[in-house]
Image (cartoon, rainbow, N blue to C red):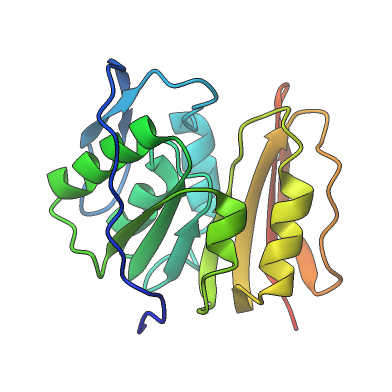
Length: 204
């Protein structure tokens, strides 16, 4: 799928943050690869258990998909999608330290800019600059910051989710106060003690 987004190089500030662990790619062409992640406030990589559940949900939708990982963090969800033969992924990350590590991990996996594009900055600002539609969108924001309502609205207003495309939303276990448009149908849901996972599909 052809990109219709401006190429831009983002200068990322080197930081003194230390690598605190890794995320593991659980299936596909990069299966078993471990990618280092930083100890950054608010960074909460999806567990292997939740990731496995999610990508079982996404099995019919991932291959050949154009993806958007809005609060990329470690990039675990976007990298897992690419490993499972998604066509491309745009990673959006606000934190400069986390973005720098994301860029390093893109290089570590040997991904091209056509496959993996990192955009460092505010999700609110970047979403308004995108002019393509995505088959698969990940929304896994930092908890307790009430970010979902405005982000869902921006995705809707800018028609970023393709027809029949799916969007995964992960939020606090008690449920974040957000609403989705009438043309997003809830197709999967899982309630964990501290996490609520939902998958919607745009049906019209």
